[in-house]
Amino acid sequence: MLYTKELTVKYNVDILVVGGGAAGVAASVAAARSGKSVLICENGGCFGGVGTTGLVPSFAPFTDGDDIIIGGIGLEIRKNVSKDYPLSTYWTPIEVEELKREYDRIVSDSGAKILFFTKMCDAVTDDKGNIEYIVFTSKTGIFAVKAKIYIDCTGDGELAYFAGAKYEVGDENGNVMPPTLCSVWSGINIKKYGGKNSGTGSESLERAISDGIFTYPDRHLSGLFHKKGELEGIGGGNLGHIFGNDPLSNESLTEGMIIGRKMMLEYQRYYREYVDGCKKIKLLSTGEVLGIRESRRIVCDYMLNAGDFLKRSVFKDDIARYNYPVDIHVMDTSEEEYKRFREEYEKNMKYKHGESYGIPYRSLCPVGLDNLLVAGRCIGTDRSMEATVRVMPACFMTGQAAGTAAAMATELGDTRRVDSAVLRERLIKDGALI
Image (cartoon, rainbow, N blue to C red; front, side, top):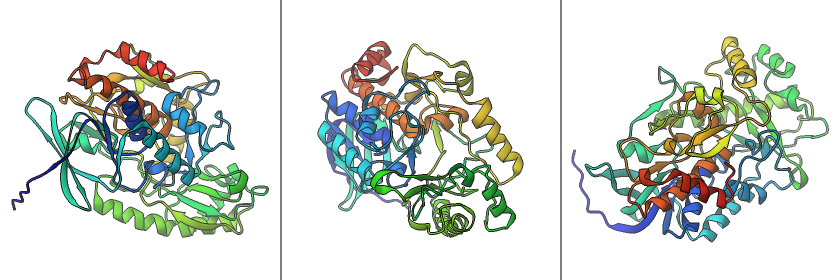
């Protein structure tokens, strides 16, 4: 079947950012603050990705245990939200509506053009390794956008994929970490709440598993992140892995959403019957999207790898440093897999205070494409490193670096002509901590 349609180029800008999660927000703000014309297109109705529409309950750490290591745009955002929690808080609960408004503010104030409800459906490239234009669909039909430099902040590497970039997925057999359908709960009695006694490794969880209340006897339970201040009694849930889910399949994602919503009734029963302070707990809402932990990793000029984590690597073209553990969630419900996770996350692939690894600019440059950068979860890494750079603070950093580099590349015609030393100077000037 052949379908043809003449496209209108609706926008022609210096920089196009596709995807409005943490990386996309930082990329668009950095590029626009550099004086470039920027368009950011987001499929949903707000910025933030899994941190807002996905209801992921907390920020990962902005600190290495001793000092704040996340600067720039990410730190500016963090200072304006979740103010009841010090910047040194390891897991900082997110107030979703506050975060949505902050993202709206910072992107709008930067001068970037915002388009919500705008989904990318194709990328057209030439024979020289350049993207010519991106095709989007919207309420008014299909249209094209042209830019000098493109930034993929889709999480799943969709722009790079449509442009023909090479990519890797999962382990050696293509298996990926299971996602979670995150949630919001009321009725938590903070003074009596079990906290650590309710989640991974707890006696309460083991009793509930032995009693057979769960469809999936999942010992890896991140638990509830309860809030302070006016929102006391409310908690964000990161509960229950959805095993066997394929993040690149519409059918599988659909099934995962249905399974996830059903599972929440089991967790409501668990908290009410087994956990102190939760007798009146009630499910308020679940995310509009699954919390995907792993999908495409775009093959870039340098693939950050587990060896770099173990060596605490420093690169000449570092655009950021980070220290989150290698966090590969359990792949099934076996006790062996749970033991593997605990050993890796808590001992073998976890840093001491003050340690960190570098993220090189080359890991943002997809092989074979000269006017595309990637930021966020889909940058060039092996599986182990994807499991540490995937969290929001790291996405802020790679996004800001991509946006700043893209602004430089518009004047050079090629992302690989960007001088990494000059890029680092600009990032530091803009508050990045490298």
